[in-house]
Image (cartoon, rainbow, N blue to C red):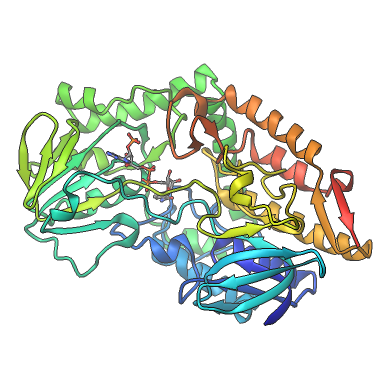
Length: 484
Ligand code: NAP
């Protein structure tokens, strides 16, 4: 049995940030349990061609760890992964990570007021606090199609890219056309013989206007970091002042983004039928807005076809569509996203009286500030329920959460108490407020998206990042009950 004050689950952006924040406060009695063999989370797993961040790196990076080496405004996966490795090493978090440890379940032991944690490989840990830092998007969702097992060609998900699979000269079907798909489709289209994209619904895409940073810009960033801070602030401002209002239903902001997206669409594509197929039927901001400079131009290639008729079944040699047409393929790539619900699955958490978190969340996950839920003392969540964003960088939320959780842990020690647990009434009021506000946002204007569990929006935050940071700036001790 290994004993720690704090166990962090996951060594991605959240887990690394949490480790840094603890070390900054002089707390070293913690371990980060990571199921894989290396750190990085989403940026370790998603290695598909063209994988990059759709938030500019100057904002999609820790506010306290400026990187003047970004090569592009929107960095590629490998650069982001390197940044994570460098940052974890610089602050010493890497020394606290235990790899190959997948947390299976955690049970709160009332006698000791500690969590007993079991990993899949049979290790046991005991900790006063658990911090989950497992992200919202890391279990690939592969929809079941009739006959898919019989398909003789290659099949894989974008997040488990098979780099051994030869693409050159192949007939490839891609299912899905959202954030992941629009990044790798332009990369693989020139290599394959034929590429058919199965699109269920069109998405809003706006230009990225990407380019490499010049040497001069990198030099400025290195020698005058304050300029990069202003630059970072500007990127943040665009999200809060244009995209967030669009999500809130502001007509001018929606009009601006729509016109911008449609301008890019019509500039790249002249075929009216194709333009109609690519025009979304839902309000902009209701699902994630996509950024791409090369997706639309790829669709006019001779070897690329956008298919809107849906899939009836797979056959041994290809795909049979609902309109009765069969087409042969050598490879099927699923760009079908992730299972975002139930939250924290497949890990199981059991509270003091043995109740399971999965049961508490059967109607959809919720948590006070996205961090704490009643019945589960000293369980702290990062990037938990209702903390995802549709308009700016998640790192802003993660940093606020890390600070808040460390503040809670230190505050608890100062009060000489062992556990804190959010009061049920406080959590209920909070969730009622968030759900009411979400009803008025664009996220509620579609029937389904990965932001939802059933009809309920369980993933997204209801406001801007300024408000979230403000609400997390100081722990409201009245919201919690304690045991010593
Ligand atoms: P996603 O947004 O969930 O998109 C899944 C796609 O698959 C959609 O086009 C969806 O169609 C389609 N699909 C799902 N099930 C289907 C089925 N049974 N039949 C036909 N089509 C089906 O997944 P994603 O593109 O991987 O992106 C997920 C999230 O990851 C993004 O929203 C973003 O937050 C993040 N991400 C970020 C980056 C980045 O920063 N660079 C890159 C990739 C992903 P419908 O739209 O009709 O449901």
